[in-house]
Image 1 (cartoon, rainbow, N blue to C red):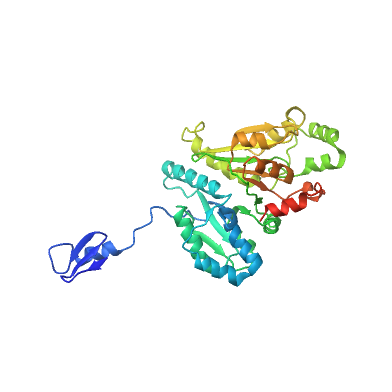
Image 2 (image 1 turned 120 degrees about the vertical axis):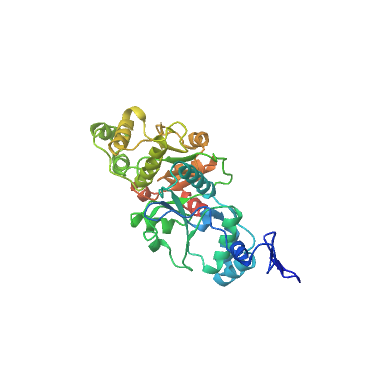
Length: 366
């Protein structure tokens, strides 16, 4: 915008002349008015809310190191001094981009619907860091309008207020707190090298026991061994398992899938779900599938591995995110480039880890 000596006001490349023959000053006010955003966040009560921490959405390793070694004041000074420099993508970045791709297709098919993914940035960062986060979001052209910055306090108490359906963080303590409040949550690992994933189809892979299902069967296995586990599953084949912490997230994915199916897009659906389980198909797989059926839920692909490593299968699937309750499987997936999340739920968390695993686990969260 500029004003020259002949009182010609130039706005966005258009000239407006006072008392002249060109655009009126009313036109000028219209030109000065900020453009209306092309889209707005869905209503919280209708949306599927995915809460992500800043440290899984973006790579903030250097900043975290400054905080741990030099304290809060130096951390804030550094962030303010570098607020024009965008963070690079973190492990949740591709997942969030895939959610936005699904939203784009839902808006095309159902223009009036508010049943969309809504990503909320949940962080215990100080508000001073907010400008750098906003600049980074705009730089990467992400659509994230809802923020929660708690200035060093735990943000977990706000998750229910935001109607959170899934919470992802790099902090296992916060994830534990969220699960205790009944919120689906997982600790996200960062692979050394992340595999390329689809830009048009959201792919989500789940373990079964202690993730989608309760840990009832896993308790039998831990207490009595594999043979008793098989006997138990055969005897209870027609009794549905109780729900696990991620069942609700699979439900909302299924609900959105049906909206695409209703438009004849079952084979081209931009959401695809996978069950990747250590169960054996013939001896214990029937109960898992019958449980999903009893819940009215579909899974697109079911892979029963009979105890084989999950990493190679996940490398083939290339999911945006994979959930498992056992660190062993999470690490195996991450080593193959999959963004894997640990769900600290059930009996597996109470069994001693392999020697040396604890230190390795903790270092992976930083």
